[in-house]
Image (cartoon, rainbow, N blue to C red; front, side):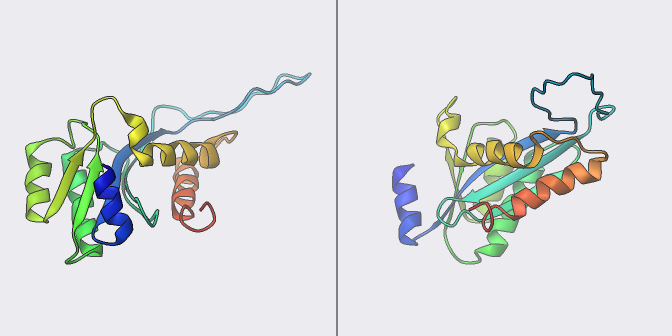
Length: 170
């Protein structure tokens, strides 16, 4: 991992950390003490907003694929395609964990076709994946102590935090 990050810092390649976050629509409240009991409306059902993100290790630029269904290997292939569009003829190294939808034949073939190097982290090592810290930050900034009246507002809050990651949340 360190040689790859060193090459990225020197500008010889682009290193991206990839992982998915699954945000569930609901009320994210902290502990509150008051004399009168308060009732807060919460979401009905289980609506999820899935974000598959790639974080550039040097520039902190985020590339994301979002949906409300499931993150699968086809989403990872779409993300590889987007990264190749951004860096046309430059070497790209993807650093990812061992999730089943990331470590499969389809993703490995797509990485070969798009000329992208895959670097898998050791099992059970989420602290090595920088994008895990990004997801924690986004949950804290966009969702903590908030209640959303619609799923669209929930998605907007997450998207605004992701869009502002390289500018106002730098």
